Image (cartoon, rainbow, N blue to C red; front, side, top):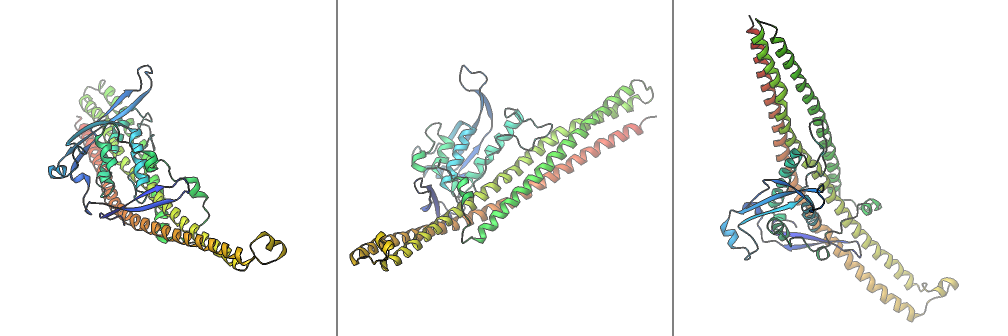
Length: 429
């Protein structure tokens, strides 16, 4: 099981295509995590040039700062394995390597997703340039959130490679041959699998839910982008009122002051939308996290299907050899017996029976082993899915509530501006 006392790791056998899941001891208690002992921040990003000659090849690096806030925990760590204070720069591609590694090492976990690599659900004010300062800053915040998600997980947070990623400039990357983490599950292989004989209804429900979650998050983000586009345009049009009222005030002796002040408030209506939509964009990024998490949830279900496929394949091998054994016992397996209908000799039959019985036992052991792997994966995955669902409720409730509060704040500011405009016009004598 994937409780705090026991976790599981997985490896991908490139020769057989089998996924193995093995429990390994974990010294952490159920509620413990790295985040309780260490502060993690990604406070800034920096644009750099790749190479001295190519001045147009830029990339962005992100500063990761760590600080151990639990001296007792630090004293219990292996000497030199953890720094009290750490500071280093990482590229986005290095975050991708870490994500791939954790995905392969812990296939039963709904892994926290990385932020978007390219701008999604863009609208007029949102630049699609990945070097745009606003985009870089939102990605910085999302990468910090990614690290905090891992650091708060009772299993992922204590992975040695993750800790090395946080504090070691060089030599942190896992050995691909040793771990096999780069041998990803082939999606085409999963899609090409013929329907399984036995489907776990729990994972079928989770898979269907992941599709629904993805669709709902996609639709919400699309509607929000369309609304942001229109709100931005409508508010900016009020700047025309501001210009007209200001020009009008110049030719009106008695009305001039009131018109000019009203024009200024119209300008404030036009300018006020920028800050509000920037705050909205941060909330949209939080929704995108669960859009991508739906894909991680779906992947866990596909991996369970792969394990079930291995079980059924092993069972088929047992059945095939039992059928062969039955034919051998009847003495009709050699070429001569099939052509002329003769019976195999006792000596030949006994030799074949012995070989087949040995293979049957080997395949039965394989069935037992794959069932154990599937069941271990199932227990661990269901526990982590439950953890994910609980966290999702908390996060989405907070995000949606923040969105509503932001709309109320915008409405109050708008009401205040229109009240001032009314007062300005009513003050005209």
